[in-house]
Image 1 (tube, helix red, strand yellow):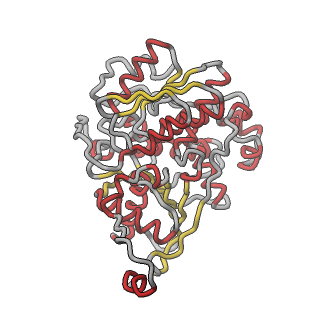
Image 2: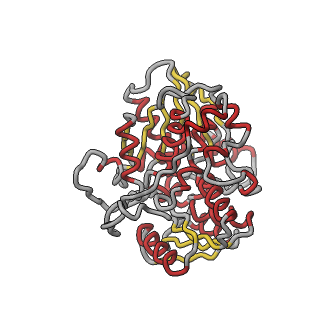
Image 3: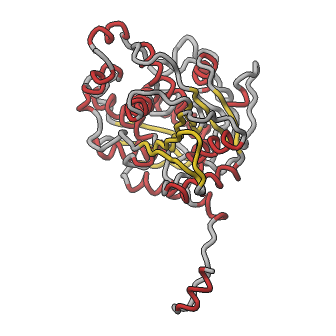
Length: 390
């Protein structure tokens, strides 16, 4: 089962779907079997995952990505605590590996041999890589405009790639029809509920890496809303187990050229404005997980903002030059949101803040091409080198 068959009645291809399922667990029962977070970690969080065994997960190292403290920017000390959660360290250099791993494990346990996904690139390359490690077949439907680096990954991992003349939303609809026609297992975010369960594991790691303390604020890039929902869901699980007593403020950051999620949060009628952002991974006309994300944001008093594409590119460059972490534009949107908050004095002194980086900058060099200034070559002499560096 994917969408709720009751709530999903009346869904159309031109609006966010209703009925995205939320995975629930026997929280009261789990509470009686554990004495705290360490007991959950000891068992690989299996009590909070929709699979039978941790051994069903891929053999690759997925998750447990580093959380780097940043104490200054451009040699100016920061008056608050900032940590960068670098999920480009995953096997296919993307946060999406968390979701793909869980979907793959579920498919393995249920003898589902072929997994299909629609993707602008990251989810597709992630599923392709994870399936390669699990000896599963992956079929990836992508817009023909997807970045070359991501298409290259998909092909090298041995997946079947299907480029379509259209955008992500059209690729998504085709993947649903293929699922209905051939019965292949569908990995699509905001369709398969277990993608959220995979992504929520980042919340468990942040809590542990901060030595069992919660950050005050987490900046997250937003496209269809599944990453935000995943991070919310992880902390909500810990809330329901009485391991934590509050929810961090989740800040969902979108490009102002693709703001169909945050712009509609408080609207009664959903209005779509076609996306024109160069940040392909968060370029979404129809945010598929809109309703769940809106519920989380409203229930837990989350925050939203938009940033310009120029701010995203500048954030990527500033981040790389100050930390050595090179993020693709979609990931850098979260850091651009943090910089906006900092510029407008919206971050209290001594507060604790996390920025979630979701993908490597090597995944989309095309978007960064116009800010790259490579000098003309020189004849190899000390004088020429001195002039160039001056």
